[in-house]
Length: 149
Image (tube, helix red, strand yellow):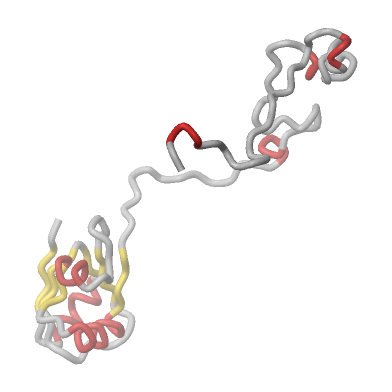
């Protein structure tokens, strides 16, 4: 096969439908747009979410609540999970870098520790936030908490 012999696959290329080119073409007159109406006019484009005069769904459904732009989202770990994670991933300290390298959080996640469950091992924490009860439980187990911003 040579470059000048290249052709598209048979049946893959279709002729353009030439509308509005006289009555003899079979597609003259109204140019396949039917008689009258909004869609037959030049420059017509259907607006997004237009439902033909029916009240659009975004106007029928009531608005609820709001999105607080100042909210800080945390990836939450409970004290009950931490012993298992330290064993499984052999963590020396519970820090953002260790959690990221082991695939437990993404690079931009902020980490918060909550006091649900019990902590048995002595672990050092370098995290973004911890509840007061969690801090007390960690220090009671012999660990320490460093809050990183």
